[in-house]
Image 1 (spheres, rainbow, N blue to C red):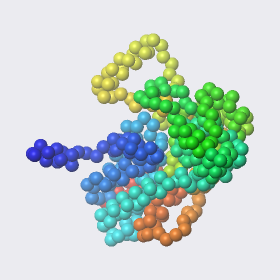
Image 2: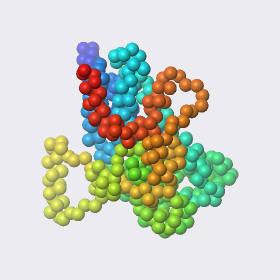
Image 3: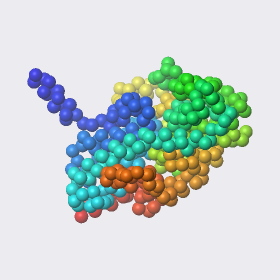
Image 4: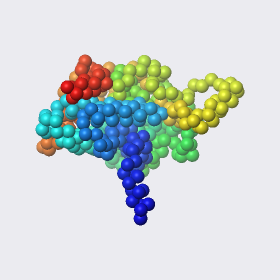
Length: 400
């Protein structure tokens, strides 16, 4: 009995592991995206933290976000979520008087958590809006080439199949590019990414042809358009997506096929890469090695495993590439259809549209505070250009 009580006490005092929580959220929910998993992990962190002041909350958020980014091989996707949450937190903490009595941190904290959960729920529903906007691009009798395991692309294609009448009235076909890269992956024995979508489309009566990556150039002549997903949409209108998307964009541009990108608005990330090698991640794609290099690498790996200092690298099967904006015909998002050149301006200057129907008080707060376009618009202003600068200003104000 005593051991049970001590175990429970130890569980209560165990520090919150944001990395384990983030990974568990991705494992437990197949439909959750990396930015939303990051936001949900931060909300759970604040729920379990004992911080009682704004300064403590900001410090906790800053340290936990940095630790999460360092611990994930590819933090590009989750960075979009952590940046959004940080902007929302700063925006909310700058107007405490509107959320309750001035200085009532408990009321502010409750508001942060409730509206954070509300935003998570809304973000998960964004694929339905994307499918509605993108449905008009799929014409009768067209053939679509796609790749990867994008859930937004799958939702769009399945919605088009449902509206066309299913098995009795199939009106479009799909060429699905399946990755053959399994080097360095723990899940190399699993089926290729995208097979679940292939089965779902075939079950709805949509003819699907699966091809290897080496057959993209040969098969593009039979396609009318390309539709792909993205891990992140960067500030210049380009995208970061699974390895192979860039070459599909190059081939589509060369033979005059439209190249559409389907992505949720919460995947817009604060990056401005100019080329493939400007991404802030280390990838094992092009590595020149001699026999001596391989021997030395094995020694370093053994030493790193002993000391726990092994560098975080992406396995080849999880590598990504950057597709520049001049290859993209349009971005299909839950905020509408945007051209790459106008996407940043649209998010920067776009006015907020009110959805019909009554809203509760907390829902209204969330709509104004958690507007993705409004939060991203801070990016261009002097006041919100650097998040750390605004955090420091807020700390100084509270100390005075």
